[in-house]
Image (cartoon, rainbow, N blue to C red; front, side, top):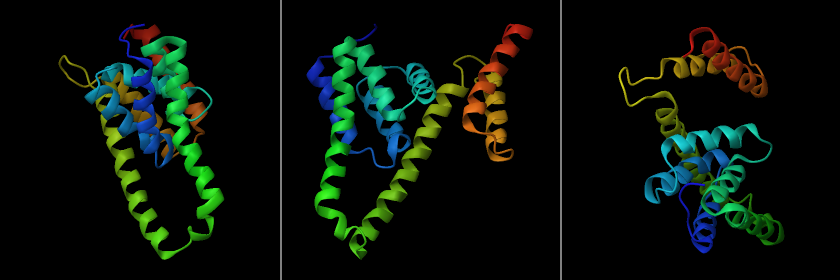
Length: 188
């Protein structure tokens, strides 16, 4: 299972992360990386990328799937449960509060100004996560320091999404097929 952590520590860490998951799972990727890889050292950059691949390709929000997987890695089934509850609880409570008390105020100038700032920060968080994950997924520690095959697949997938507007599910399947084909032909 790798490194372990006390259940209360797992719960509190994911509760903290859940409090700041503005922008959904992708906005939270930078926070997940900072807390779990850089500050806590619970997982490595490589593990983070692998977990994101699994979390993205399974049904459900990427942050919740990541929390479930990381919690399991750190504390087995109980770790999985406390990490998932921790990351889901704050947004759940916030939505309940908004629905119950704040809805009439959500269209005010103050709310608009606050959300403008939060939205800008979310874009920065997503870009930071992109750069962090990209560095871990597309580089190597040995020369040429760029994983040429992973980078080629990345560029191809980006073009399929951006220019051809191919559905993301097909792009994920095609990327796995491309990687397998390259391996079968060239053993790379």
